[in-house]
Image (cartoon, rainbow, N blue to C red; front, side, top):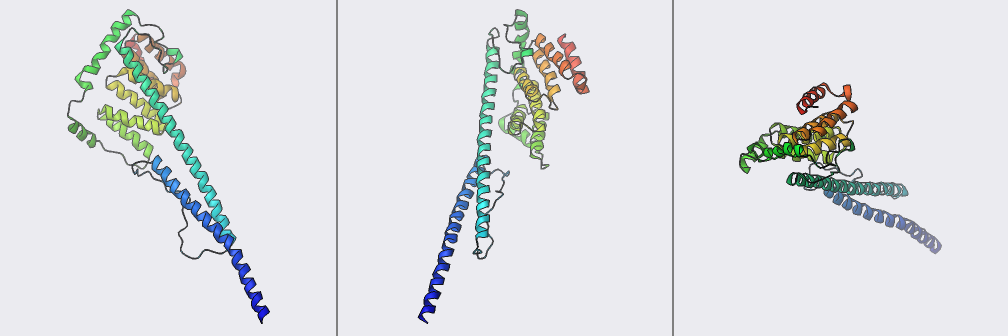
Length: 315
């Protein structure tokens, strides 16, 4: 009898010892899951600050199914694989966040450089400047402008001082005008963002349209809407009486997206902006490049407008 009790106690002890490593491993993996979920939520708050509605739950969610865990190794192995996958996704998302932040900083630096260069040129028309955003085939600022060009470019400052370029209403009244513009909600975030910028431009709310269109280009630079948004950004500058900024916006669209839907339009409007700046020779170069690069492939409206613009510029 004593031997049977000893044998039974020994077997129970061995069974308990066998289950302890599995329980310890399960507890360790549970802690890893909790830590990864906290890190994932932190990354999501960084990617979508301010409680943006564009919030995506992690593809691997914790198992909240009630019930006793199976005392086998299969669930532990499955949970380990899920934790490994979650760690891999977290690393990928963190890398994308850092890359997007770097690209945004670079875009802001480029725009600041463009604006400073244009302000400097208008402050001192005789200064020699070589902007980095000017193509080699249209390098108009390598040489100092001639006297005739300086005289022709002098009236360009006038649109910036005309009442049309300044808000004629108070801030409250302008905010009311902006609120009247309907915000699209088709479910396609990229298209809705561009359409809202288009509606602001159509309502002649140019500064607001420019801010919206810049956001589209910055947030979705590889989308098909980016070509439309960058071209319309140049149009907004042009309509506001800022042909220098318009020329930069049009050239960037043509350079960065030569196959985009609005690349021919941007090249044509770049010639128009250069003509408004009094740089007729450079405008003619832009029109010639339009014919050489796109030719009959350019949309009919672009070819028609380009023909009229060439005649006006004397090309």
